[in-house]
Length: 252
Image (cartoon, rainbow, N blue to C red; front, side, top):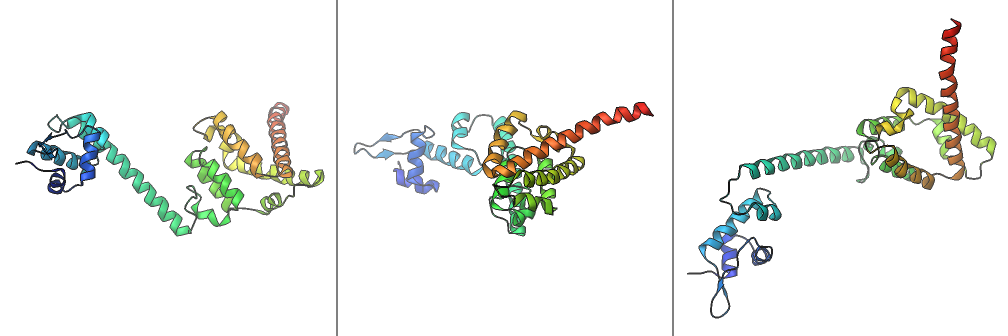
């Protein structure tokens, strides 16, 4: 006695579409046909179909099933590989659940990158875009530090944000001076900020390639001038402070 495609699918608890797909990708052998052209499936086809279904239920992909051949092969290595993949999947899902819980707790937008959920309400559209870019560049510890700084937002940052594009040089210089002081404080607290490339796993060139265009796009011309001036003031201060130390030591 033989079964039709629909009967085979029904016995195996699957669909005709699935059976036909397994034929197309070579996982299930084509059966002989009756004189009327209908397929005639035998117990061997049912066994193979049930084997495929069983392996799929364990998380084995169709590609992996095809690569490992028949189920009567020694499964030890395949099982170890599958177990490792499932462990990775479980870890990823647990991380996602933790991130979703944090997003829900702070009612943050779903696209908020970790760990910025707690400060999502304090992010304007531009800052949200920036931290999204930063999340692709910096390591987890650096992102946590940035989140901490966002939570401590001060008047100088509001001053910078409100700097108009047509600000005169005096206005830019005033804001730059305040920014330079803030930069020094940040670098003292978080030394990696003196050399951000050290917190960028993919290196300095990658960091610059990603961050610089984003900054140029998101800040107006006056803000960009203020940033450049603040960096210059900070470097000048650091350089002067560095040369003062040996002079004081020599005089002592």
